[in-house]
Length: 193
Image (cartoon, rainbow, N blue to C red):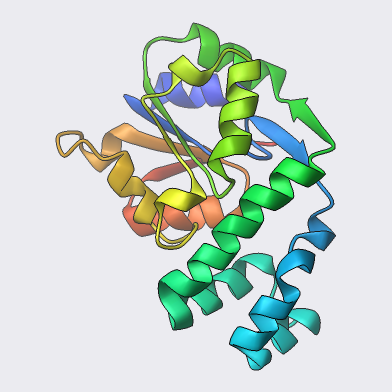
């Protein structure tokens, strides 16, 4: 947290975009079972893409991107519906990044957003449980975008049309967060949970 505060002290930012899972909180889920409930649907939609996933040629995120690139809304609906179901039925625990939560609750110098690849019900539940729902100008979830990070669709729900991109800082943990920031031309700060 000290590193983030130092960064913000030395770099004039007005708008902070936070990833959710493994940044502010960590959702403890059996991620290895993430696609179990939709295996038949995905293999029926495209056996080659599914085989690449099963053979670990592509991981979860790349597999989602490839399906959505090829099959659009039909594939997106499968992934969105599954994500909501999976997170609601398999969430085992939530770890809290206490210093970051304290910063979000107590620092009013910035306009703050959440931009996540998790589902809205999970995010809202956790934010409400920790009294953080009102801390964010917007909460962008996977159901709101055409494709998840590193695609930049989520930024359209954040961009006010007046703030220069130099004023934004994307705070996250993953290569997908960093990739979205880079594609937008927004600075990135990596958080270690």
